[in-house]
Image 1: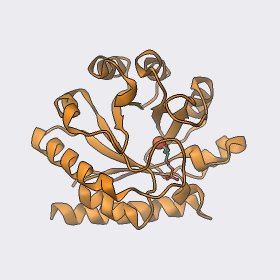
Image 2 (image 1 turned 120 degrees about the vertical axis):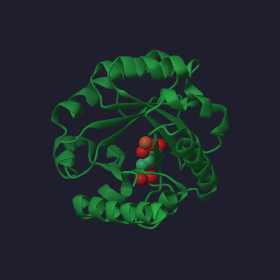
Image 3 (image 1 turned 90 degrees about the horizontal axis):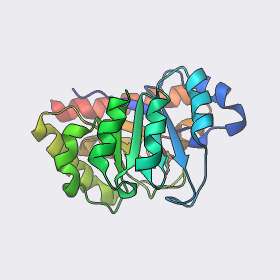
Length: 225
Ligand SMILES: O=C(CO)[C@H](O)[C@H](O)COP(=O)(O)O
Ligand SMILES: [Fe+2]
């Protein structure tokens, strides 16, 4: 069975108490760190210095989601910082194959993200260069949005291509993942689930992670039976 990973997004955490907020999700597979530059998306979050401090105190590996323009220029610096995984947007890169290779050569897993309206087909040849494909299930920029069901066929096509390739590329979904929508995303073929408001909006974030993992794993198991 494909492994089910739950990566809470700190976008919904209390930014004044990040160290304590990270301790509340120590049962997560990784922490999803949303970097926004106010150019690629109309919102601004944190940059590399804060990400490095998060990395220094985090009980789990970092999964950076770079929503930044000119990814070719800026993404390698995040790999140099020793992050487990760095995901750039295909729409923000002029040379995505070169960039993915660069991230790997600097020791990070290479992820590439697609906005909801970006088709996956032009990028399928790139699968051997990637450790993870991120299919955005909301328009990037803000937490707390509703899951876009129109992305489900794209997730299905990505899963078929990954399985057909024999490569172990993870398929991540990000945006609007809840106890309810995780089932639809997992049925379609996703296996790494980002959840911001569903985790940090819960009274007990660790229990919310366990619940999401239970639902996601159950659906993935059923899909492979
Ligand atoms: O990349 C993102 C937004 O661009 C966030 O990771 C995502 O929205 C998570 O928040 P939520 O689970 O509340 O939708
Ligand atoms: Fe994200």
